[in-house]
Length: 161
Image 1 (cartoon, one colour):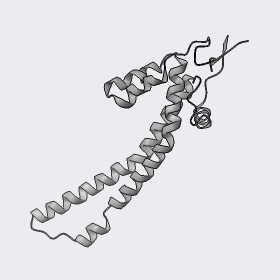
Image 2 (cartoon, one colour):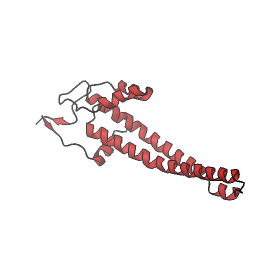
Image 3 (tube, one colour):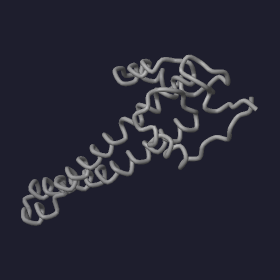
Image 4 (cartoon, helix red, strand yellow):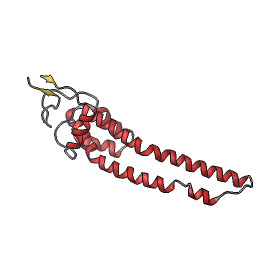
C-alpha cells in the first residue's frame, strides 16, 4: 500500500464542494481539517465586522449616556445618522446565508471523515445536540483512517501499488 499525498488547502475545499451533499464513502484527514479551517476563516471574516460595529454602537450609547448624566446635550440626529444597527443586521443576514450554504458540505465532510476512522456518521449527533459531548466526534476525526477497506468503502488515502 502506498499513501497518496495529502490534499492542499484549495484541493480540500474543491473536494468538499464537489461532494456537496455526499454522505457516503470516506474522507481524508487533510480534506476534513482544511475544510474545517476554511469554515472557521469564513466565520470570523463574516462576524468580526459585526463585533467591531457592535462595539462602536455600545461606545456611542455610553458616550450619549455620559453626556446626559453630566447635564450635556446629545445630538440625536448625529447619533441616529451614525447608528450601525442596519449594517449589523445586514451583515448578520449575509453571514447566516453563507453559513447555511456551508452547512451541508461541512456535515458531509464530517460524516465522510467519521466513516474513514470506522465510525458511523450518526456520531455527529453528539456534536449537533450536546455541549461538551460534542467534542467526541471532533476528537474522533484526528486519527488516520485504516489503509484497508471498511464497511464505508475503500481508503481515500492508501492505494494498491
